[in-house]
Image (cartoon, rainbow, N blue to C red; front, top):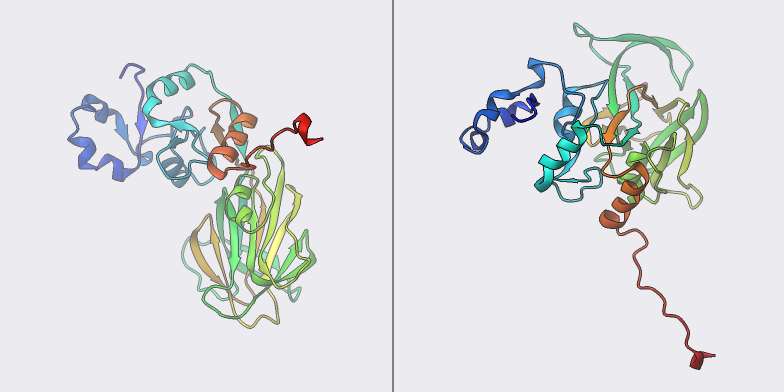
Length: 297
């Protein structure tokens, strides 16, 4: 009310009885609206509401820590009034978190109205085909795994049209620098600062002693297909959602998106990242070594 702001919320928040009946909100609820009723504010927003509402361009996101880990949410909600005021007044640093543009090409698919189709070349046979495209914007990672099958996953990985390796194991993680501290780090990958223009490729339990995670430039195009020798299908998910099966003839194209997520920093991009590493992941936490006294020589 003081700043004469319009607040955009998810519909379930707008309809929540706990909000509508709370007298502390008062007339503020009259300025609540969903994204369908207007344009998102470019000043601040919540991770869940704004990332779900906008598929391409995303307004600056101010993440409040209301969950369990809080790696991407440096702001504490108990001080939201002063912190939001500070952001509105322009006292904020922004970090651009890169996303992945992911397209899934399906070989066997019944055309529906409104579908997008594109001519591509099959990775396994070099035959041109017209197939529908399903596209996602991914902030953390694309995960390809063996699903419910007991067999190894067997997928081919291409970089700019060239076959670079066949992944045999539990699967593969393709992540952004932001996603490098999520599933990828649990699979043995290095942690990459979000300002680094890169894509990380991390195998999941590879059946090879020499298959290490690698980092490739942000400008490359990756393509993942099911190997001709694969005994089973593969499954793919995008930021842990939209899970679907990948069969022979299907392919997944991954490039760096033109639409990064502008994230508002608590202090600055470098300090925020290292504080999150220490507080959330306990990076390099160790009891310090004592100095040697004269009697030790």
